[in-house]
Image (tube, rainbow, N blue to C red; front, side, top):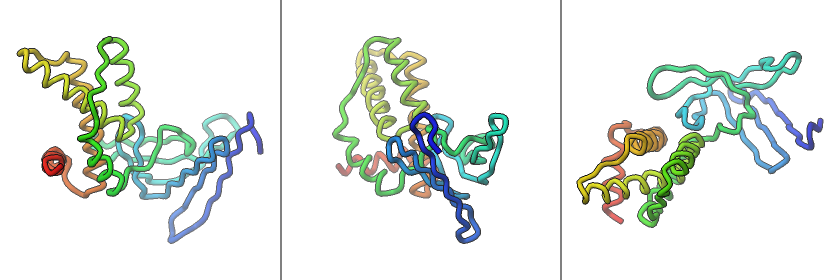
Length: 196
Protein backbone atom coordinates (compact mmCIF):
# COMPACT_ATOMS: atom_id res chain seq x y z
CA UNK A 1 0.00 0.00 0.00
CA UNK A 2 3.05 2.26 0.17
CA UNK A 3 4.61 3.74 -2.97
CA UNK A 4 7.55 6.09 -2.34
CA UNK A 5 6.28 6.73 1.20
CA UNK A 6 2.92 7.91 -0.17
CA UNK A 7 -0.27 6.09 0.66
CA UNK A 8 -3.45 6.67 -1.18
CA UNK A 9 -6.63 5.28 0.26
CA UNK A 10 -9.66 5.24 -1.97
CA UNK A 11 -13.16 4.82 -0.70
CA UNK A 12 -16.15 4.29 -2.96
CA UNK A 13 -19.66 4.47 -1.68
CA UNK A 14 -23.00 4.66 -3.32
CA UNK A 15 -24.82 7.63 -1.89
CA UNK A 16 -28.10 8.95 -3.24
CA UNK A 17 -27.39 7.25 -6.55
CA UNK A 18 -24.07 9.07 -6.94
CA UNK A 19 -20.61 7.60 -6.61
CA UNK A 20 -18.48 9.33 -4.02
CA UNK A 21 -14.69 9.15 -4.02
CA UNK A 22 -12.51 10.26 -1.16
CA UNK A 23 -8.78 10.45 -1.64
CA UNK A 24 -6.43 10.75 1.30
CA UNK A 25 -2.93 11.83 0.41
CA UNK A 26 -1.28 10.91 3.66
CA UNK A 27 1.86 12.84 2.79
CA UNK A 28 0.17 16.14 3.59
CA UNK A 29 -2.92 14.81 5.28
CA UNK A 30 -5.03 16.47 2.61
CA UNK A 31 -8.40 15.02 1.71
CA UNK A 32 -10.12 15.68 -1.61
CA UNK A 33 -13.61 14.51 -2.34
CA UNK A 34 -15.47 15.08 -5.57
CA UNK A 35 -18.76 13.51 -6.53
CA UNK A 36 -20.56 13.32 -9.81
CA UNK A 37 -22.12 16.73 -10.60
CA UNK A 38 -19.59 18.61 -8.38
CA UNK A 39 -17.94 21.69 -9.85
CA UNK A 40 -14.14 21.86 -9.86
CA UNK A 41 -11.49 24.33 -10.97
CA UNK A 42 -8.93 22.68 -13.27
CA UNK A 43 -6.08 25.19 -13.10
CA UNK A 44 -6.17 27.70 -15.96
CA UNK A 45 -8.43 25.44 -18.01
CA UNK A 46 -11.42 26.79 -16.11
CA UNK A 47 -14.45 25.40 -14.31
CA UNK A 48 -15.64 21.87 -15.01
CA UNK A 49 -18.39 19.62 -13.75
CA UNK A 50 -17.62 16.05 -12.75
CA UNK A 51 -19.77 14.01 -15.15
CA UNK A 52 -18.53 10.52 -14.26
CA UNK A 53 -16.06 8.71 -12.07
CA UNK A 54 -14.42 5.84 -13.92
CA UNK A 55 -11.53 3.40 -13.76
CA UNK A 56 -9.06 3.80 -16.61
CA UNK A 57 -5.67 2.28 -17.38
CA UNK A 58 -3.44 5.30 -17.85
CA UNK A 59 -0.41 3.03 -17.52
CA UNK A 60 -0.50 -0.62 -18.60
CA UNK A 61 -2.03 -2.84 -15.88
CA UNK A 62 -2.44 0.10 -13.47
CA UNK A 63 -6.08 1.15 -13.47
CA UNK A 64 -6.64 4.54 -11.89
CA UNK A 65 -9.73 6.30 -10.68
CA UNK A 66 -10.41 9.17 -13.07
CA UNK A 67 -12.89 11.99 -13.39
CA UNK A 68 -14.67 12.68 -16.67
CA UNK A 69 -14.98 16.48 -16.65
CA UNK A 70 -17.18 18.69 -18.83
CA UNK A 71 -16.45 22.40 -19.22
CA UNK A 72 -19.01 24.82 -17.84
CA UNK A 73 -17.99 27.94 -19.82
CA UNK A 74 -16.85 28.47 -23.38
CA UNK A 75 -16.50 25.74 -25.98
CA UNK A 76 -17.79 22.40 -24.68
CA UNK A 77 -14.77 20.34 -23.69
CA UNK A 78 -14.63 16.93 -22.08
CA UNK A 79 -11.47 15.83 -20.26
CA UNK A 80 -10.54 12.60 -18.50
CA UNK A 81 -8.03 13.18 -15.71
CA UNK A 82 -6.77 11.14 -12.74
CA UNK A 83 -8.61 11.81 -9.49
CA UNK A 84 -5.18 12.47 -7.96
CA UNK A 85 -4.49 15.40 -10.33
CA UNK A 86 -3.09 18.20 -8.11
CA UNK A 87 -4.50 20.90 -10.42
CA UNK A 88 -8.06 20.00 -9.42
CA UNK A 89 -9.65 21.91 -6.57
CA UNK A 90 -13.17 22.58 -5.52
CA UNK A 91 -14.78 25.83 -6.56
CA UNK A 92 -14.87 28.49 -3.83
CA UNK A 93 -18.22 28.84 -2.11
CA UNK A 94 -20.08 32.14 -1.50
CA UNK A 95 -18.57 32.67 1.95
CA UNK A 96 -15.02 32.20 0.67
CA UNK A 97 -15.63 34.56 -2.23
CA UNK A 98 -17.24 37.14 0.08
CA UNK A 99 -14.17 36.97 2.32
CA UNK A 100 -11.87 37.35 -0.70
CA UNK A 101 -13.85 40.38 -1.97
CA UNK A 102 -13.72 41.95 1.52
CA UNK A 103 -9.92 41.55 1.51
CA UNK A 104 -9.42 43.00 -2.00
CA UNK A 105 -9.23 46.67 -0.89
CA UNK A 106 -6.40 45.69 1.45
CA UNK A 107 -4.32 44.18 -1.35
CA UNK A 108 -1.51 46.30 -2.75
CA UNK A 109 0.13 46.10 -6.13
CA UNK A 110 2.77 43.41 -6.29
CA UNK A 111 4.19 44.51 -9.65
CA UNK A 112 7.38 42.79 -10.84
CA UNK A 113 9.56 45.12 -12.93
CA UNK A 114 11.58 42.36 -14.61
CA UNK A 115 9.43 41.45 -17.63
CA UNK A 116 10.61 37.83 -17.94
CA UNK A 117 10.20 37.13 -14.21
CA UNK A 118 6.79 38.85 -14.21
CA UNK A 119 5.52 36.76 -17.14
CA UNK A 120 6.82 33.57 -15.54
CA UNK A 121 5.23 34.38 -12.16
CA UNK A 122 1.91 35.47 -13.65
CA UNK A 123 1.70 32.45 -15.96
CA UNK A 124 2.27 30.22 -12.94
CA UNK A 125 -0.57 31.98 -11.06
CA UNK A 126 -2.89 31.60 -14.06
CA UNK A 127 -1.96 27.92 -14.37
CA UNK A 128 -2.70 27.33 -10.67
CA UNK A 129 -6.04 29.16 -10.83
CA UNK A 130 -6.12 30.07 -7.12
CA UNK A 131 -8.77 32.76 -6.58
CA UNK A 132 -6.80 34.80 -4.03
CA UNK A 133 -3.67 34.84 -6.19
CA UNK A 134 -5.75 35.77 -9.24
CA UNK A 135 -7.22 38.72 -7.30
CA UNK A 136 -3.69 39.85 -6.35
CA UNK A 137 -2.55 39.52 -9.97
CA UNK A 138 -5.55 41.55 -11.21
CA UNK A 139 -4.89 44.33 -8.70
CA UNK A 140 -1.18 44.43 -9.60
CA UNK A 141 -1.73 44.65 -13.36
CA UNK A 142 -4.72 46.99 -13.03
CA UNK A 143 -2.69 49.34 -10.80
CA UNK A 144 0.11 49.35 -13.39
CA UNK A 145 -2.47 50.04 -16.11
CA UNK A 146 -3.74 53.09 -14.20
CA UNK A 147 -0.17 54.39 -13.73
CA UNK A 148 0.53 54.00 -17.44
CA UNK A 149 -2.71 55.79 -18.39
CA UNK A 150 -1.51 58.85 -16.45
CA UNK A 151 1.52 58.94 -18.79
CA UNK A 152 -0.70 58.22 -21.83
CA UNK A 153 0.84 54.79 -22.22
CA UNK A 154 -0.73 51.36 -22.27
CA UNK A 155 0.04 47.91 -20.94
CA UNK A 156 2.11 45.53 -23.02
CA UNK A 157 0.03 43.06 -25.01
CA UNK A 158 1.19 40.21 -22.76
CA UNK A 159 0.21 42.03 -19.55
CA UNK A 160 -3.17 43.00 -21.03
CA UNK A 161 -3.83 39.38 -22.04
CA UNK A 162 -2.85 38.11 -18.58
CA UNK A 163 -5.16 40.66 -16.94
CA UNK A 164 -8.02 39.59 -19.20
CA UNK A 165 -7.39 35.88 -18.53
CA UNK A 166 -7.13 36.38 -14.75
CA UNK A 167 -10.40 38.34 -14.73
CA UNK A 168 -12.06 35.66 -16.84
CA UNK A 169 -10.96 32.85 -14.50
CA UNK A 170 -12.04 34.72 -11.37
CA UNK A 171 -15.34 35.85 -12.90
CA UNK A 172 -16.19 32.24 -13.85
CA UNK A 173 -15.86 31.15 -10.26
CA UNK A 174 -17.81 34.10 -8.85
CA UNK A 175 -20.52 33.66 -11.50
CA UNK A 176 -20.99 30.00 -10.64
CA UNK A 177 -20.98 30.45 -6.86
CA UNK A 178 -23.30 33.48 -6.88
CA UNK A 179 -25.49 32.11 -9.69
CA UNK A 180 -25.18 35.29 -11.74
CA UNK A 181 -24.20 35.76 -15.38
CA UNK A 182 -20.48 36.02 -16.01
CA UNK A 183 -21.07 39.38 -17.74
CA UNK A 184 -22.62 40.75 -14.51
CA UNK A 185 -19.67 39.90 -12.26
CA UNK A 186 -17.63 43.07 -12.95
CA UNK A 187 -20.58 45.31 -12.00
CA UNK A 188 -21.27 43.17 -8.94
CA UNK A 189 -17.64 43.51 -7.80
CA UNK A 190 -17.63 47.28 -8.39
CA UNK A 191 -20.80 47.73 -6.33
CA UNK A 192 -19.41 45.57 -3.52
CA UNK A 193 -16.05 47.34 -3.49
CA UNK A 194 -17.64 50.84 -3.56
CA UNK A 195 -19.32 50.06 -0.26
CA UNK A 196 -15.99 49.32 1.43
